Image 1 (cartoon, rainbow, N blue to C red):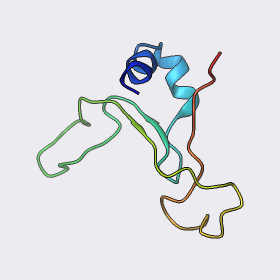
Image 2 (cartoon, rainbow, N blue to C red):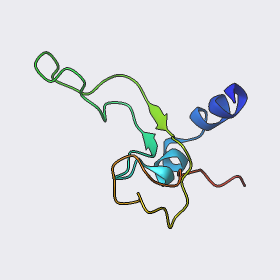
Image 3 (cartoon, helix red, strand yellow):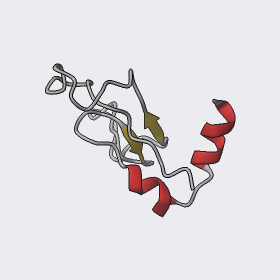
Length: 77
């Protein structure tokens, strides 16, 4: 898994943005996208992330709840 992570984060920003984090909190979050301490920060955090979770089916009955969703994956090609 670590090798895949290194490979993904080495991609150009344009490629990573194709799997931008969605409303279900799955996918890529670029540098400065999140502000975890809004009282003390002017800019977003100096980190980038890729959010995944339990890979639920597209027709999951819990699909309308936060954090229930199929994962978003980059094109393997």
